[in-house]
Image 1 (spheres, rainbow, N blue to C red):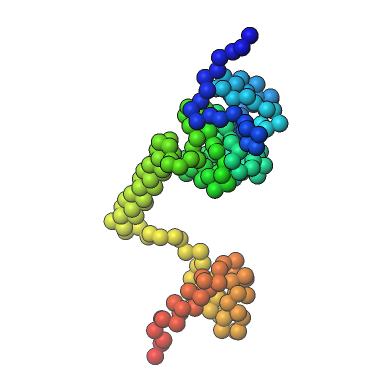
Image 2: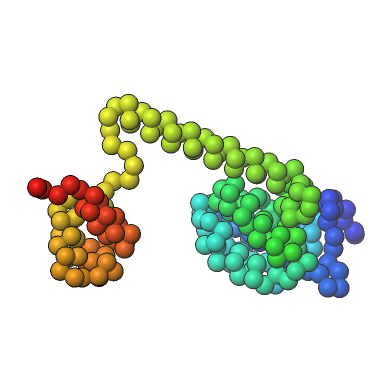
Length: 214
């Protein structure tokens, strides 16, 4: 008996040249993702098992470190589609998810998410879901910037030192100058102290600006 399925918006079945792939991240179980496949079927997709990739990594793992997702994205051809159940499958936060979507857009891969109704997320003009992601990222960036500015202001008012802590002690500075005075190159001194050439050059420049004893 035929079953009625709700076909998601913008959904197009596989044509002769286009294929649909599926990615699942199940951080809590390593068994066959039967329930997830059932959910995809209920959403109107015909799942071909050799086009399914599954990771079992925690949600905080970035998309770039999800090995099965990376392999799948290398496998998918332009104009093919990638389907996920949840937006969190594509990254560990809003910025990471947007990065994945933009990589897919560059590769001409259509991305659809079941929890968002199956709308194509890489199309132009951008769907509301992607605009919302961008708004969240802007909000987080603004909040982070304001927190940093507030902390810096508070530290200055309390007389605390601000900026990055010095990586080298005053004694290290003196030793660096001695080594440079003996003719060692900036690169060699940097290697000996485990620091960058720029740091060594700043030490040398600062010493040159100090007044000489008369």
